[in-house]
Every structure is written in structure tokens, then in C-alpha cells.
Image (cartoon, rainbow, N blue to C red; front, side, top):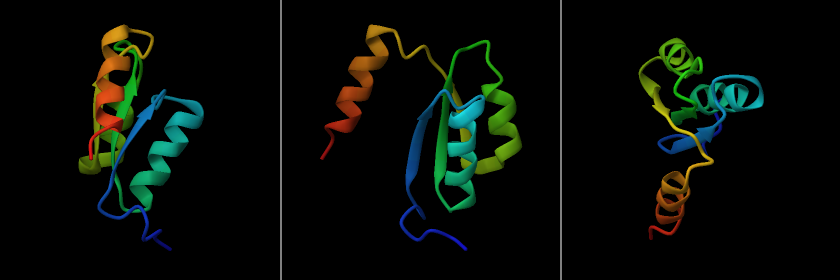
Amino acid sequence: MLCVALQGLVGIVTGAASGLGRATAERFVREGAKVVICDLPKSAGQEVADQLGSDAVFSPVDVRETMFRAWFEMLVNLK
């Protein structure tokens, strides 16, 4: 059963190359969302995105970096 609330949305999931982040990304795609897999450049992020298909892309990023935090704050504040 699809979750109507996620259909047509895009989720940004940090730590999505493994564990809880990966499970979250998989669930988002299964429920009809597109997902950006965010994880370290040397992670399995690209493999996860490839496995999830055309509804997932990998964005190598280190969330500890100041540029990422500024980008994310700008994204969250979009209206």
C-alpha cells in the first residue's frame, strides 16, 4: 500500500548508504517519493541509488562541512 503523503515528493536522506538512512530511503521510494541519497563520497551511496533505480540519486556529501549546513538551511527555508 502506497503512502499518498509521499507520492510526488523528494526526500533528502543523510547517511543513506547504510543502516537506518538506507532503510528510510528504500521506504521513501517504495512509497512513491524520489530520494537523494546523501553520504560520504567513499560510501556505498552510488550502489544504493543504483539498486533503488530511477527514483534515487546519490549526492556525495559530508554533512559536517559548513557548506552543506548552509545549503541545507537555505533549502529548508524555501517557500
